Image (cartoon, rainbow, N blue to C red; front, side, top):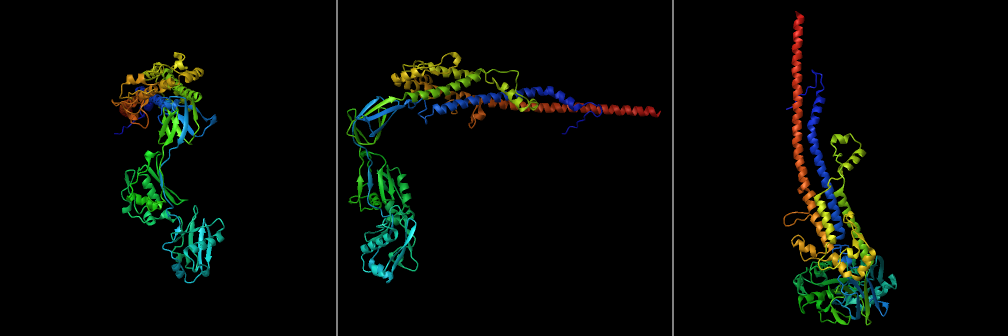
Length: 630
């Protein structure tokens, strides 16, 4: 119901201003609650900023997908320099890569007798490429030519020439002689580099040139191309659009339940050669089919080296028949069928004979990559790349110190109690620069003394100094220390000392940082996990305890995530501070309703006063009129 508001027409008072003045006192409670809500939102921002920084450090130095930077992984310390030589000269017979678990720094490859190879099957040209006649016969050809001269257009690599042969030249020739005559004419038109474009394949004429697109066209007014059995525009690469049924004479029955290495696959006669290879290579057969367009040749190669990984195809099976077709051989007993079975790598390391199915293998933390055979010994000397390791540790320490500094600063930041969040009216009364400066002071110390930050910093500090089970060194013993309590747990590095310890205690340093516990995070014995874990895992666990978005068995996320939530996660609505702000929303809504009612009450009160005064004024006027009339 609308309220009629009289504004001092009778009394002469500024009732609007009087109501506003009365409401200022009433609004103080609402402004206080709004300021409290704003302050909580600032606390949330501050906590979320710390969560972001924790996650950034984890992403850079504790990511399993980036092992070279992950200080909780031995890979971050697997940095070495290598000297590989034979008779004092650098050798190219082998490459090596060590990881941090390497058991020795010096090896001798006495000899590399044999490299590992992959089993490979192939045959002759498949017959896919080329423009080829079908059932060609010279007598029939001469009859179809009907005593005309022969003329056709031939395109090679985009250049087209007319190939002409007089009737008298081809009459009475054999197929082979006609082939030679065609090549002579082609060479005459295209040049001496273009020889043997036409070949006689089992009595059929085939136009082809490896690596070039060869096309045949009608020459206007002649039937020469038709007499050969060709269609104008045919190309030696037309096979790419043809089905394997058309090319090889295969049916769906021929292509069903084929088996390689004991695994079954099927093809379709309507597949083109590219689809055929894709289906076969995705069937998990342990072998790869490839096609060399230059040689017009298919090959089937084992995916892995070594004689134990040779390809198995049952003799006399439909699978053998299929591969025989595309290999261009009668069967696997044909002399045209080629197979080079896979072999193992054979070598001797430090006087021990070694057999490996691959040229790349790892023994005792050292990965070998054999590249050549060698009858001469190859010496491998490995030294720790101390500079790279120290640089990596220095980078981590710099970023870790920055996080410690940021968290400690927020924990101990001074709070300016005279600077409260601004109301809308207060903000409007200030310039943008004044608002910025005011809020810098008002936001200072919003999470000062936070118990969550206190325990977070304390746990990080303790993780750096408490001993790791089974590791006889500490950070301080290798030159990484926190100088005083005033440093707030930040680290400093004595590079000279660290370099010396990397030379004498390399394995201990690796374990100090990267040792792993058998106890799983969250579900294992947390105390045992902490004692057994290296510094890297400890720090990562602690940061997960505070910043993870996954839940433990009690449904809890990280401590700071539960406190303030993070964007793009369900915690953005379910955290402690958001719930607090929602509670403030309810209180604010209740107060706003109360103030609206109060304002209406004041206006109604003044309205009643104005109405009463108006009546009194009217009565007084009546009395004056009555007295005046007497």
